[in-house]
Amino acid sequence: MAEGWSRQRVAVIGAGAIGGAIAARLDAIGHEVVVTARGDNLAAIAADGLLLRGAFGTHTAQVEAVPALERRPDVAILATKATGAVAALEASREALADVPLLVVQNGLGGERAAARLLGHERVAGGIALMAANSMEPGTVTVTARGDTIVGGAEGARFAALLGQAIPTSETPSIEGAQWTKLLINMVNAIPAIVGRSVQDVIRDPGLRRVLVAAMRETARTGLASGVRFQPLQGLTPLLVRLVAWGPAALAAQVPLRIKDRLGDVPNLGSTQQSIRRGQPTEVDAINGAVVAAAAALGREAPVNAALVALVHEVERRGRFLQASAVRQLV
Image 1: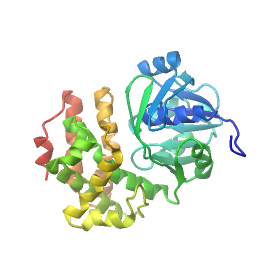
Image 2: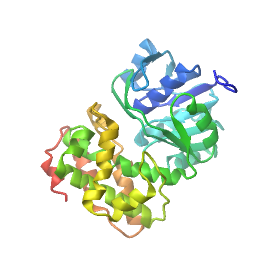
Image 3: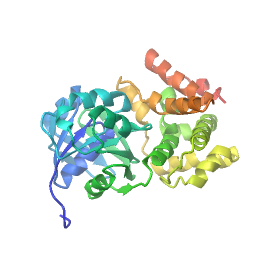
């Protein structure tokens, strides 16, 4: 172990794709890890452990698995979908009193909402840039490595904790990093609507045109809101401005770069994974966040609004739509 390393009891609330990967890696380097999970996932982890495979290698983490925390950990990481965050925190609220918490979530401001709910400020924000799937109970497959970005209150604590387990860096502006991740997360909705991988959607010229339009709305809304976008995965503030205002052919290079980073293993995106598991999606916290931020400025984000509606249609109907339903948006 590295000098200064000390074993900690770490609670990971939500052992899905990202939470499961983080939990397994922390277990692999020797921390005492407890995870919360539900249903078949909880049963599988409790019985056989948490299997991690893919870009970080293979490891079966024999972690404690519970529906909610009963004992106070040293630190905690919230990695549920945005839709399940409040319920997950409420279920473990007593055990989390004054416990340093890292909120790793899509969308904007999850750490601020958690701090309000828990009644303390020891809450950091986090962004996971790895690509991971969890399509069978108790198993997480990491298809592409990527940094986990942390910032805000307790940011340094979690950068030190996670840094020995997974690639981690600290940002001076978690809000700016969240907006850059929001821009990247525009790749999620269309695969969830048409039932294809992120890579397939980006290869399709018509679908890629709609994706670029959603990215443009996101970049323009963030810039108009005064956000200082932070560099993530090669997406610099200059490239954000290019997405916002540059020629469409140049802006399209951003999703094409994302496709290349994802590699050859088909990535479904988190929104489509939720649909395939029959769970509520985060589309309101991703594309819907752009619509809400634009409305706060007296603007509209019609492409993102349409994508939100189509994802909800897929949720209601229980089947994917034809690609033409998306291509006609632009």
